[in-house]
Image (cartoon, rainbow, N blue to C red; front, side):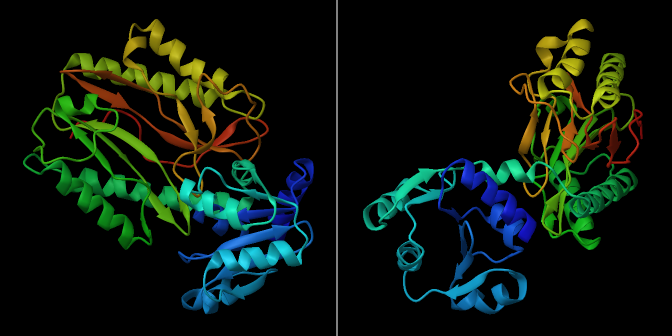
Amino acid sequence: MIKRIEKLRALMKNEVIDAYLVTSSANLRYLTNFTGTAGLAFITLDKAFFITDFRYTEQANEQVEEMTIIQQQGDIVGEIIKLVEKEGINVLGFEDAWMTYAEYSVFEEVIDAELAPASGMIEKLREQKDAGEIAIIEKACAIADEGFEYILKMIRPGMTEIEVANQLDFFMRSLGASGTSFDTIVASGIRSALPHGVASEKMIEQGDLITLDFGCVYQGYVSDITRTFAIGNPGQQLKDIYQIVLAAQLKVIETAQAGVTGAQLDAVARDFITEAGYGEAFGHSTGHGIGMEIHEGPNISRSNNHPLSVGNVITDEPGIYLAGLGGVRIEDDLVILAQGNRILTKAPKELILL
């Protein structure tokens, strides 16, 4: 963790920030390994403090290394005021994307330092995963892969989408997941045309094409996978669309490596689908970064002209959605290498007709 804090300090020096107040739960875990729900970090250019209350002091002492643990006495803002004064802080960076306006109003009134909005600094560090982080994400992906295999064996007509989602979620927990990455998407029949069709009471029927988009949280990191399959014959047009999406998805895998921009990678899938005549039916970006959160940098979208870096973990998830008919999305998680990439999700991608 100390290496991560040193990297943050280098960014703080560039931004002329004397201290950085960390309040995002994901960023706290990244910098401190703290998994509780009440606490914050106060990082200066040469010291680090972790403030929490009585409920979490013992946990903080066990999990947080290389920081002075402060058990707050009364309001946590009072502890920050003391540190600002004691450490001679003139400019205090804070995570404006996470602080409410009400909290900011209090800070502005009582803290004797310039408040500098500084969201994104830690998130930028988090984009490049180290070997330990990648290993954890790979385990989260392996649990998701097993979840897909389990669903293929148990799904049947007459089940509701919610039943399928609940079975999948529970199964992944039985393998060691602490939760799901997001609300599991089970979209069957014409509902598969909904890119984010969270599981409903709809019954699965013979001939339904089913999009299953899900993932799990393992040791604080997420996986994110989508597979589309059918129970019976979904019809020729949907089978043809499946092959177009799969080809686009594989082209992204062929192209993804360090140095390629998010926009370039997005264009690989988007141009192929457009040439196939379905450009208007592909309305979302080709992918996004994952890690401690389900959506983090780098984005694989038209707007991202920054090159990918070694250690980025991204999704590759093109799709085609036709209202009144159905839709297809296929998604893998990839770790970016200097040359090429490594696929972390291993579940089969050929069209499965159960």
